[in-house]
Image (cartoon, rainbow, N blue to C red; front, side):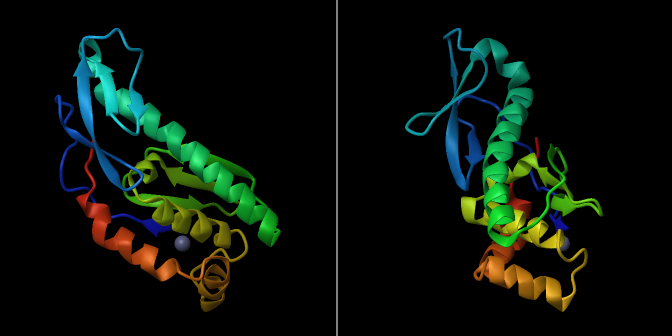
Length: 170
Ligand SMILES: [Zn+2]
C-alpha cells in the first residue's frame, strides 16, 4: 500500500484556475464554445464550456480516471511481462488516502489522483503495487525486489511523501 497525506486545499474551477496533470499545472479556460466535456491540450491547458462549470469537478474526475487507467495499465502490463508477475485486475478508484493497493488476489487499485503527479512518481506506485503481487507485505524481500524493478524508487517515494499533501482536493 502506498499512503497519501490528506490534501491541503480545494481545487478551484474558475477561469484561470490551475489544474495539475502529470506533475505540471495548466490553466483552466472557461469558454463560450459548445465544447463537449473537458478538453485538454498541452499548449493551451484545460478548456471547458462556461455552461458546464458546475460539472467541472465531475469532468475532471472522469478525465483523471481515464488518464490514470491508461498510464497505469501500460506500465503494469510491461512490468508483469518483464518480471513474470500475475495481475488479476486493475481498478482506478477515487481514494484520497492511498495512492495504490494490492489485494491478496492481486487485484490492484490505483487512485485517480495519480493523474496529478509526475510520470516517474506514478511509475513508482505502479512498481510498488506490482512488487506486492510477489511479496504481500513490506518485508526486506519486498523492498529488495522493488529495488530490482525500479532502482531509483526512493527518490519518487520521497517526492510523493513531500508533495502529496500539496495536491488539491476536489
Ligand atoms: Zn505497499
